[in-house]
Image 1 (cartoon, rainbow, N blue to C red):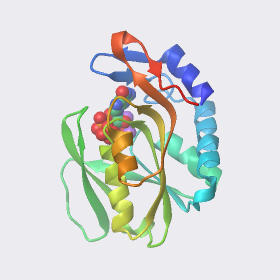
Image 2: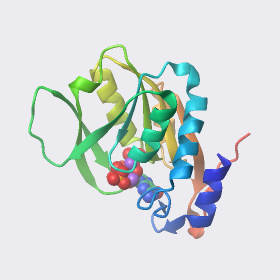
Image 3: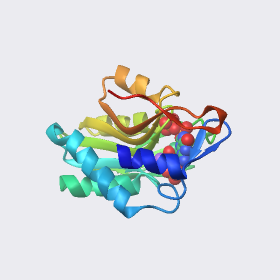
Image 4: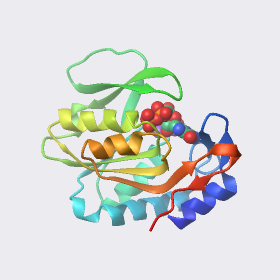
Length: 192
Ligand code: G4P
Ligand code: NA
Ligand code: NA
C-alpha cells in the first residue's frame, strides 16, 4: 500500500533492536485519513471471505480494526489484555507472550461476542513473531468460529510471524512488509 509505505519512509523512526517507531500516525497520534484507507484496502483484499466480525487487540489495533469493520459493515471486537486473571465462565482466555516486552498477557474476549460459525477477520497493527495473532486465532477457534484471514498493517518480515501463520494455514495480508531495519534504515520486501 503505497500511501502507508510513504508514511513509514517519511515518519518512521528505527530504534535499536529491530523496532520501528510509528508514533506519529499509528501508535500514539493516529492519522484518521490513513486509517480509512487501511480499512478500504483490507475490505478489498478480504472481500470474498464472508467476514462477519473483525477482531483485534487493544490498544493500537483498534483504529485500523474499526475502519476495517466499518467497510465490511460488521462489528469490531477488541480483545482485552490483563496481567492476572479472574477466571469466569463467560470469557475466552489465551496467553500471549510478547518477545518485545518480555511479558505474558492473558487476552480475553467475552463469549457473548463470537458465535459458532462466524467468519472472523483478525486485524493488528504489527506482525513480529505472530504471538498476538495466534492468540486471537485460538480464541476464534475456541468459539467454534473460523478465521477469515489475518490483516496486518506493518509486517516485520525479518521475524517469523508471517511464515508461522501461513504454515498454520492462515491467509495473511500485510499492507507493508519491512524486510530490514538494519543500519537505521527501513527497507521493504519487493512485491511483484
Ligand atoms: P507478536 O505479537 O507478533 O509476537 O509481536 P510482539 O510480541 O513482539 O509485539 C508486542 C507489542 O509490540 C505489540 O503491541 C506489537 O504491536 C508491538 N510491536 C512489535 N514490533 C513492533 C515495532 O517494530 N514497532 C512498534 N511500534 N510496535 C511493535 P502491544 O503490546 O499489543 O501494544 P499496543 O501498542 O497495541 O498497546
Ligand atoms: Na498491537
Ligand atoms: Na503496538
